[in-house]
Amino acid sequence: MTDATRSVPRTSWREGVTRSDSDTIVVEAPVALVYNGISHVVMMATPADLEDLALGFSLSEGIIEAPGQLLDCEMQPRDKGLELQMTITNQRFAALKQRRRNLTGRTGCGLCGLESLEQAMPVLDPVHGDYSMKHSAIQKAAAALGGVQSLKQDTGGVHGAIWCNTRGDIELVREDVGRHNALDKLLGAMQQGDHSAEGCLLVTSRASYEMVAKVASCGFPILAAVSAPTSLAVQQAEDCGLTLLGFVQPGRQVIYTHPQRIIEDI
Image (cartoon, rainbow, N blue to C red):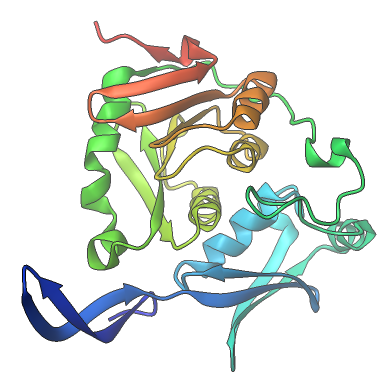
Protein backbone atom coordinates (compact mmCIF):
# COMPACT_ATOMS: atom_id res chain seq x y z
CA MET A 1 0.00 0.00 0.00
CA THR A 2 1.02 3.61 -0.54
CA ASP A 3 -0.28 6.94 0.76
CA ALA A 4 -2.48 6.98 -2.35
CA THR A 5 -4.12 3.58 -1.78
CA ARG A 6 -5.71 1.64 1.06
CA SER A 7 -6.68 -1.98 1.60
CA VAL A 8 -10.26 -2.66 2.67
CA PRO A 9 -12.22 -5.87 3.22
CA ARG A 10 -14.83 -6.79 0.64
CA THR A 11 -17.36 -9.42 -0.23
CA SER A 12 -17.57 -10.26 -3.92
CA TRP A 13 -20.44 -12.00 -5.68
CA ARG A 14 -20.00 -13.45 -9.16
CA GLU A 15 -22.31 -15.89 -10.91
CA GLY A 16 -23.80 -17.15 -7.65
CA VAL A 17 -20.50 -17.53 -5.79
CA THR A 18 -19.68 -15.30 -2.81
CA ARG A 19 -16.10 -14.71 -1.69
CA SER A 20 -14.58 -12.57 1.07
CA ASP A 21 -11.16 -11.02 0.54
CA SER A 22 -9.59 -7.55 0.36
CA ASP A 23 -9.52 -4.79 -2.22
CA THR A 24 -7.13 -1.93 -2.97
CA ILE A 25 -8.94 1.40 -3.26
CA VAL A 26 -7.73 4.90 -3.99
CA VAL A 27 -7.48 7.36 -1.10
CA GLU A 28 -9.65 10.47 -1.31
CA ALA A 29 -8.80 13.06 1.32
CA PRO A 30 -9.52 16.75 2.03
CA VAL A 31 -6.51 18.84 1.04
CA ALA A 32 -6.46 22.52 2.05
CA LEU A 33 -4.35 24.93 -0.01
CA VAL A 34 -3.09 27.67 2.29
CA TYR A 35 -1.28 30.76 0.99
CA ASN A 36 0.77 32.85 3.42
CA GLY A 37 -1.29 31.52 6.31
CA ILE A 38 -4.70 32.10 4.68
CA SER A 39 -6.78 29.10 3.61
CA HIS A 40 -7.76 29.47 -0.03
CA VAL A 41 -9.62 26.32 -1.00
CA VAL A 42 -10.22 22.77 0.18
CA MET A 43 -10.43 20.07 -2.45
CA MET A 44 -10.83 16.33 -2.39
CA ALA A 45 -7.63 14.83 -3.78
CA THR A 46 -5.39 11.79 -3.77
CA PRO A 47 -2.47 12.46 -1.37
CA ALA A 48 0.33 11.81 -3.86
CA ASP A 49 2.47 14.32 -5.79
CA LEU A 50 0.96 17.12 -3.72
CA GLU A 51 3.86 19.52 -4.33
CA ASP A 52 3.13 19.19 -8.05
CA LEU A 53 -0.54 19.89 -7.30
CA ALA A 54 0.37 23.01 -5.32
CA LEU A 55 2.53 24.45 -8.08
CA GLY A 56 0.27 23.44 -10.96
CA PHE A 57 -2.88 24.77 -9.28
CA SER A 58 -1.16 28.03 -8.35
CA LEU A 59 -0.08 28.57 -11.95
CA SER A 60 -3.19 27.37 -13.74
CA GLU A 61 -5.49 29.44 -11.50
CA GLY A 62 -3.37 32.59 -11.93
CA ILE A 63 -2.43 32.86 -8.26
CA ILE A 64 1.19 33.07 -9.33
CA GLU A 65 2.54 33.97 -12.76
CA ALA A 66 5.85 32.09 -12.63
CA PRO A 67 7.11 29.07 -10.66
CA GLY A 68 9.65 31.21 -8.78
CA GLN A 69 6.82 33.13 -7.11
CA LEU A 70 5.99 30.05 -5.06
CA LEU A 71 8.69 30.41 -2.41
CA ASP A 72 7.93 27.42 -0.20
CA CYS A 73 5.51 24.53 0.16
CA GLU A 74 5.12 22.26 3.18
CA MET A 75 2.61 19.48 3.74
CA GLN A 76 1.09 19.36 7.22
CA PRO A 77 -1.13 16.47 8.36
CA ARG A 78 -4.28 17.44 10.21
CA ASP A 79 -6.90 15.39 12.05
CA LYS A 80 -9.31 15.40 9.12
CA GLY A 81 -6.99 15.82 6.16
CA LEU A 82 -3.89 17.60 4.91
CA GLU A 83 -2.75 21.18 4.52
CA LEU A 84 -0.42 22.43 1.82
CA GLN A 85 1.10 25.49 3.45
CA MET A 86 2.55 27.68 0.74
CA THR A 87 4.45 30.94 0.77
CA ILE A 88 4.12 33.18 -2.26
CA THR A 89 5.65 36.57 -2.97
CA ASN A 90 4.10 39.63 -1.36
CA GLN A 91 2.99 40.97 -4.73
CA ARG A 92 1.07 37.83 -5.65
CA PHE A 93 -0.39 37.52 -2.15
CA ALA A 94 -1.66 41.10 -2.35
CA ALA A 95 -3.30 40.28 -5.69
CA LEU A 96 -4.85 37.16 -4.19
CA LYS A 97 -6.35 39.09 -1.28
CA GLN A 98 -8.00 41.54 -3.68
CA ARG A 99 -10.17 38.84 -5.14
CA ARG A 100 -13.60 38.64 -3.56
CA ARG A 101 -13.88 35.00 -4.29
CA ASN A 102 -10.89 33.11 -5.59
CA LEU A 103 -12.22 30.35 -7.82
CA THR A 104 -14.46 30.25 -10.84
CA GLY A 105 -17.11 27.56 -10.62
CA ARG A 106 -16.50 24.04 -11.80
CA THR A 107 -18.71 22.30 -14.34
CA GLY A 108 -21.65 20.81 -12.48
CA CYS A 109 -21.39 22.92 -9.32
CA GLY A 110 -22.34 26.42 -10.49
CA LEU A 111 -20.32 29.60 -10.71
CA CYS A 112 -20.24 30.55 -7.06
CA GLY A 113 -19.09 34.03 -6.12
CA LEU A 114 -18.82 35.49 -9.61
CA GLU A 115 -20.22 38.94 -10.21
CA SER A 116 -20.40 39.05 -14.01
CA LEU A 117 -20.41 36.91 -17.14
CA GLU A 118 -16.99 38.33 -17.99
CA GLN A 119 -15.58 36.74 -14.85
CA ALA A 120 -17.09 33.39 -15.81
CA MET A 121 -15.52 33.49 -19.27
CA PRO A 122 -12.12 35.19 -18.97
CA VAL A 123 -10.20 36.04 -22.13
CA LEU A 124 -7.20 33.73 -22.41
CA ASP A 125 -3.86 34.88 -23.72
CA PRO A 126 -3.00 33.50 -27.17
CA VAL A 127 -1.29 30.12 -27.21
CA HIS A 128 1.71 29.76 -29.50
CA GLY A 129 3.33 26.63 -30.87
CA ASP A 130 4.28 26.05 -34.49
CA TYR A 131 5.14 22.36 -34.25
CA SER A 132 2.94 19.51 -35.40
CA MET A 133 2.13 15.94 -34.37
CA LYS A 134 1.09 12.99 -36.47
CA HIS A 135 -2.19 11.24 -35.84
CA SER A 136 -0.25 8.06 -35.18
CA ALA A 137 1.76 9.72 -32.40
CA ILE A 138 -1.36 10.63 -30.44
CA GLN A 139 -2.76 7.16 -31.06
CA LYS A 140 0.47 5.66 -29.75
CA ALA A 141 0.21 7.64 -26.51
CA ALA A 142 -3.46 6.76 -26.08
CA ALA A 143 -2.74 3.07 -26.56
CA ALA A 144 -0.06 3.21 -23.85
CA LEU A 145 -2.26 4.95 -21.25
CA GLY A 146 -3.36 1.80 -19.47
CA GLY A 147 0.18 0.60 -19.02
CA VAL A 148 1.45 3.78 -17.35
CA GLN A 149 -1.44 4.49 -14.96
CA SER A 150 -0.29 2.50 -11.95
CA LEU A 151 -2.96 3.86 -9.59
CA LYS A 152 -5.69 3.01 -12.06
CA GLN A 153 -4.30 -0.50 -12.41
CA ASP A 154 -4.39 -0.91 -8.62
CA THR A 155 -7.73 0.74 -7.91
CA GLY A 156 -9.67 1.51 -11.09
CA GLY A 157 -10.79 4.78 -9.49
CA VAL A 158 -8.64 7.63 -10.79
CA HIS A 159 -8.19 10.03 -13.67
CA GLY A 160 -4.87 10.47 -15.41
CA ALA A 161 -3.05 13.27 -17.20
CA ILE A 162 0.00 12.60 -19.34
CA TRP A 163 2.56 14.47 -21.40
CA CYS A 164 3.82 12.80 -24.54
CA ASN A 165 6.41 14.05 -27.01
CA THR A 166 5.75 14.51 -30.72
CA ARG A 167 6.68 10.84 -31.34
CA GLY A 168 3.93 9.73 -28.96
CA ASP A 169 6.29 8.59 -26.20
CA ILE A 170 4.82 9.21 -22.74
CA GLU A 171 7.24 11.19 -20.58
CA LEU A 172 5.19 12.27 -17.52
CA VAL A 173 2.12 10.83 -15.80
CA ARG A 174 0.07 12.09 -12.86
CA GLU A 175 -3.10 10.58 -11.38
CA ASP A 176 -5.81 11.68 -8.97
CA VAL A 177 -9.44 11.05 -8.07
CA GLY A 178 -10.19 14.47 -9.57
CA ARG A 179 -9.59 15.20 -13.25
CA HIS A 180 -8.62 18.81 -12.52
CA ASN A 181 -6.23 17.66 -9.81
CA ALA A 182 -4.55 15.17 -12.14
CA LEU A 183 -4.06 17.92 -14.72
CA ASP A 184 -2.75 20.40 -12.14
CA LYS A 185 -0.31 17.78 -10.84
CA LEU A 186 0.97 17.25 -14.35
CA LEU A 187 1.27 20.98 -15.04
CA GLY A 188 3.21 21.36 -11.81
CA ALA A 189 5.51 18.45 -12.61
CA MET A 190 6.23 19.91 -16.04
CA GLN A 191 7.75 23.00 -14.46
CA GLN A 192 10.78 20.88 -13.56
CA GLY A 193 11.64 20.74 -17.26
CA ASP A 194 12.27 16.98 -17.35
CA HIS A 195 10.38 16.54 -20.59
CA SER A 196 10.46 17.41 -24.27
CA ALA A 197 9.54 20.99 -25.11
CA GLU A 198 7.09 19.93 -27.81
CA GLY A 199 4.24 17.48 -27.40
CA CYS A 200 0.67 16.98 -26.25
CA LEU A 201 -1.29 16.81 -23.01
CA LEU A 202 -3.71 13.88 -22.87
CA VAL A 203 -6.38 13.57 -20.19
CA THR A 204 -8.59 10.59 -19.35
CA SER A 205 -11.77 12.63 -19.06
CA ARG A 206 -13.96 15.02 -20.98
CA ALA A 207 -12.53 18.40 -21.97
CA SER A 208 -14.45 21.16 -20.24
CA TYR A 209 -13.68 24.85 -20.46
CA GLU A 210 -11.62 24.94 -17.26
CA MET A 211 -9.35 22.17 -18.57
CA VAL A 212 -8.71 24.26 -21.68
CA ALA A 213 -8.12 27.35 -19.54
CA LYS A 214 -5.59 25.56 -17.33
CA VAL A 215 -3.61 24.22 -20.28
CA ALA A 216 -3.70 27.50 -22.17
CA SER A 217 -2.67 29.52 -19.12
CA CYS A 218 0.47 27.41 -18.90
CA GLY A 219 1.22 27.95 -22.60
CA PHE A 220 0.77 24.45 -24.03
CA PRO A 221 -0.78 24.34 -27.52
CA ILE A 222 -2.30 20.83 -27.80
CA LEU A 223 -4.85 19.20 -25.47
CA ALA A 224 -6.38 15.81 -26.19
CA ALA A 225 -9.15 14.11 -24.21
CA VAL A 226 -10.42 10.55 -24.34
CA SER A 227 -14.01 11.79 -23.99
CA ALA A 228 -16.09 14.64 -25.39
CA PRO A 229 -15.43 18.36 -25.25
CA THR A 230 -18.02 20.88 -24.13
CA SER A 231 -19.18 23.81 -26.21
CA LEU A 232 -17.32 26.29 -24.00
CA ALA A 233 -14.14 24.22 -24.25
CA VAL A 234 -14.31 24.39 -28.04
CA GLN A 235 -15.04 28.11 -27.96
CA GLN A 236 -12.18 28.83 -25.55
CA ALA A 237 -9.74 26.69 -27.53
CA GLU A 238 -10.72 28.34 -30.82
CA ASP A 239 -10.36 31.83 -29.38
CA CYS A 240 -6.94 31.31 -27.79
CA GLY A 241 -5.35 29.25 -30.57
CA LEU A 242 -5.21 25.90 -28.78
CA THR A 243 -5.59 22.65 -30.70
CA LEU A 244 -8.30 20.58 -29.00
CA LEU A 245 -8.97 16.91 -29.67
CA GLY A 246 -11.71 14.73 -28.22
CA PHE A 247 -12.79 11.10 -28.34
CA VAL A 248 -9.17 9.93 -28.52
CA GLN A 249 -9.72 6.20 -28.68
CA PRO A 250 -7.95 3.34 -30.48
CA GLY A 251 -8.41 4.02 -34.19
CA ARG A 252 -10.31 7.27 -33.67
CA GLN A 253 -9.82 10.91 -32.70
CA VAL A 254 -11.67 14.13 -33.48
CA ILE A 255 -10.01 17.52 -33.96
CA TYR A 256 -12.24 20.44 -32.97
CA THR A 257 -9.98 23.48 -33.22
CA HIS A 258 -6.79 24.56 -34.99
CA PRO A 259 -6.23 21.28 -36.87
CA GLN A 260 -3.02 22.52 -38.54
CA ARG A 261 -0.96 21.04 -35.69
CA ILE A 262 -2.21 17.50 -36.34
CA ILE A 263 -0.93 16.05 -39.60
CA GLU A 264 -1.45 12.89 -41.61
CA ASP A 265 1.08 10.09 -41.57
CA ILE A 266 3.10 9.97 -44.75
